[in-house]
Amino acid sequence: MKPFFIKSIAGNIFCLYHSPAVNVEFKRNILFIPPFAEELNRSRHMINKQAREFSEAGYGVLILDLYGTGDSEGDLGEASLAIWQKDILAAVSWLRSISDTSPIIWAMRTGGLIATDLLQKNSTLSDQMILWSPVIEGKQFMTQFLRIKTSANLTNESEDGKTSVKDLWENIDAGKSIEIAGYNLSAQMATDISALSLKAVKLPRNLSVKWVEISQAEPACLSPAIKKIVDTWKANDINITAAAVNDLPFYNLQEPVWANNYIKETLIL
Amino acid sequence: MTTILDVKNILVTTLQISGRANNIDAKTHLLGNIPELDSMAVAMLITALEDHFGFIIDDDDISAETFETFGSLCDFVIKKQSS
Image (cartoon, rainbow over all chains, first blue to last red; front, side):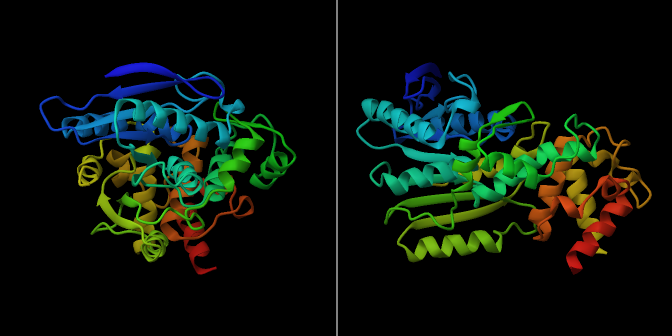
């Protein structure tokens, strides 16, 4: 496991490379695109476990902290989609310097929105993706994030008086940044993420996608919203396999839990 | 009624309090009584209810009273489902 920094457009970004196991045939490199804010903190253990499993199967895995997050330089308030996509391109360049083939792009939650948008703009970036419970609508995700602040009204943890989600969106539209659960959310970031949607993205034809979801239903099943997107992508010549597993939604849970079915399913590429 | 069971499952899973599930009934106080139910957990609970039941919860729909007891929370969800 090799920790190092890659120079990117706004500053140095922290990377962790899990080398492929030497006793198996090298398959390919994988680049991990992380989820947003607390979801990343809640998922670190699972991400690294998956990376170790990939490594044992012959994959090299580069885990990236986007600018302003984790151990990378900068503050979240200074980051933007444009900067984050440049970070991804810098990481891909690094992987291209150690391997002939493009990496598999493994993206989690909002990382899925960021990566698919980048693939739309840059279709030769990769021919293979793994999506971990991708967020479908950036705007809805942002509303849920803003709600962390307004919920403080209900639990009397608020110092700001009564703020509604509508008020917060008005502040964002006016270009103001908002502090939420210790994260500095800039108007730029909120606007950038809100503009992304898996329903609208046009992926390059013949892209292979493995989509893994957590389902609480018995038996595990994909939601109608996801099924619809999968069908649309199939109609546009995307080779997509989507699978739902029964497991705990670890990225939403404060206490770390293991989602081993999720990991097992992800290894089936 | 499956809605009440679903709400309990969502509450217990989101707050990770499965050991206390059997002690929760309509009269159980939530806000101020369950230490795991802080503002972050309330936000996550609302999102989980939205995702599971497929409705949108606006700020105007809810107040502290919605989360006063397990019963009041269930009443809210049942009402939201039929609106």
